[in-house]
Length: 340
Image 1 (cartoon, rainbow, N blue to C red):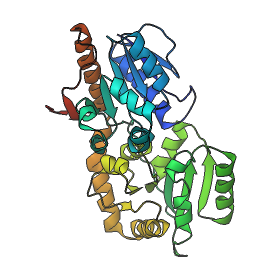
Image 2 (cartoon, one colour; image 1 turned 90 degrees about the vertical axis):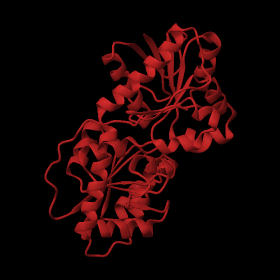
Image 3 (cartoon, rainbow, N blue to C red; image 1 turned 30 degrees about the horizontal axis):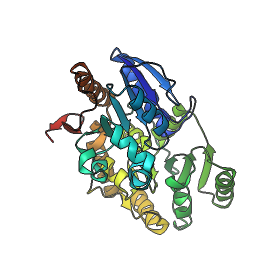
């Protein structure tokens, strides 16, 4: 099939949306499809469209739906989609209405959808290639923060938490991510200057992020809004435990009863968790075990299988002349099916 894969993140971007789009394009090509990745639909005739982001990709979604009403249209919901835009933005709501199928990136995302949209929803967990762990530093407890510097990521919470750590702590925080603005860059540099435990690398290539994770003791995922973080998938693939803000997007990745959550925006609680993880070997092993149990969700072959099954399903509808079906089968995980 010829597929248009639309993402608002441009070529070369290291944003989560572009990372997902590029990975999906590779999987779809491996499955024998012809894929064109575009920032906006160029008007070419394709068999179906996959669009990331309900609000920002709405112009492409609406034009494709109007021009090819008989063709399937898959809309993938990001964090800002799920936890903000679909509640208030008319364009985002219209994208949901026009979609043949809706994809969320972790199971808790289903709860954010109205029943009529949940009926056509699929859960596809994001994957990461396994990372071979490297020897950990013995003189420091290395913590990674991976994510661009923007408000939704609450990017400085870990650096702020470092100020509450005891003087005996060996925690060393390394933050990799592009600053969204000069203001964010300035704050990161100021924190790095004032807090010796914290360093900001700026934007780095993915191979370097994976190298950092291979040597890290811990990942901190501090977002206030997240659809299903690639950074968490990478950490699980590397066997690196995670401490995360207790938001739906993280709970959907790590599980409801995961012991490594802290309240959103609470650096004091985060500092206490960092200290416990560093000093309490039993607690650290518990986080390791819980993350290992979730690791199968992020296997590349599972994501590729789920994506291929999704395409086969909507392609069957196209061949049968169904156009945009109102609902149908709901895939709760890439390998477990349930009738709606």
